[in-house]
Image (cartoon, rainbow, N blue to C red; front, side, top):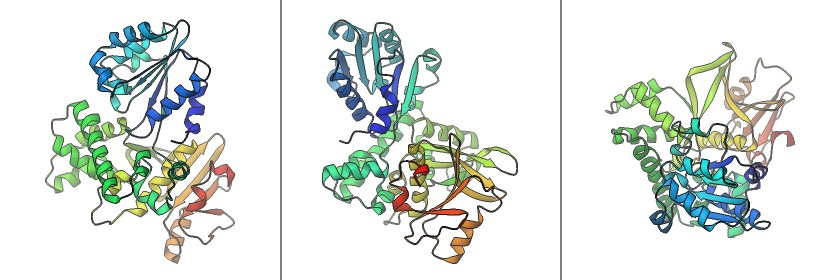
Amino acid sequence: MIKREKYIAKIRSFYNNDLIKIITGVRRCGKSEILKQIREEISEKNDNIIFLNFEDRMVTESIQKWQDIVTYVEKNRKNGFCYVFLDEVQEIDEWQLACKTLRLRDCSVFITGSNSKLLSKEFTKELSGRYVDFRIRPFVYKEILEYAKELGRDVPISDYLIWGGFPKRLEFQGEEELRIYLNDLDKTIVENDIINRYKIKKSNEFRKVASYTLISNSRIYSAKSIADYMKGNNTQCTSNTVQKWIYYLSEAYIIDQADRYSKKAKKFLESSHKLYNCDVALNTIRCLNNRYDITHNLENVIYNELIYMGYKISVYDNNGREIDFLAEKGNYRYFIQVAYSVAEEKAYQREMSAFNGLNQIDKKILITNDDIDYSTSNVTHLKLKDFLLLNNLEEN
């Protein structure tokens, strides 16, 4: 497995800090592997390390309460500063009490977990000021290429736009096996991380709303519009219920909600957002007859890549013309339009006109899958294949 230095570098400065290091993210995005890599790095200088994986039945048979975690660590640690790694710790009730106790006993605590229970409001108040959290995401394309090279495989961009970046999916050669893996993962996320966690009684209705949401990535939504759609398809749920369920999907790291900023109103619009999946495979597995939603997946992929690069993303309403992304980091601001192709004049004019009326200071970028360079004096055209290899937009 590749070393995900982009994430580890952010965590490294906290290795010897008494803050609890929480590594979060959707299931199977690679959190446990990062925890392993941190462990191996620390072990080169210090062997006073305790590791527990709570997805291991042998572990959970003997450790069932938070007090058991503390007892196990105290019994098995060596003298001096100790590094404690707790993988998928949310399986233990009140795990936060174990973490709070261990950090007071000369321990540096690292934990991973997948669902909203890990950062629930039930106990963030208790941990306030005592933890730092790091969200891990599925592979971006640069990471896919690196891991594919290890596996002796070739992964074209078209494959990434369909099947996304869950790391283990690269180990499956056939589409049938890949679909089985992704569908099982999807079911586990929806069932374990949301329905069971929040004890949702209208589970069938929730599944329908979740599926509709995940297949509607890269689109503006409102809770009312989803509720109205469901009502038209014989599924009864209120706008408030939909809003609550969308929140659950977000808390489980399955979707992101990008804020919309109105230039005219000079404020963020609270009534609607744009939704992006943590990975486009969650759209693909819901498509029938191989009618993949490449256009919306392309925008979703670029969103995920920009987040990986460290930009704050919002959707910009330029006096009625929507600009897909306003990407901000430090003193840099980029207005970005995304299209699969602008080879046709109508598409070119539509995408370019979205930039009309913007100031001349901030950079304007058009990203497409075209091979022809459509740059102008005011707008830089980035080919998708070049954009996906950038570490940041300043390189361009």
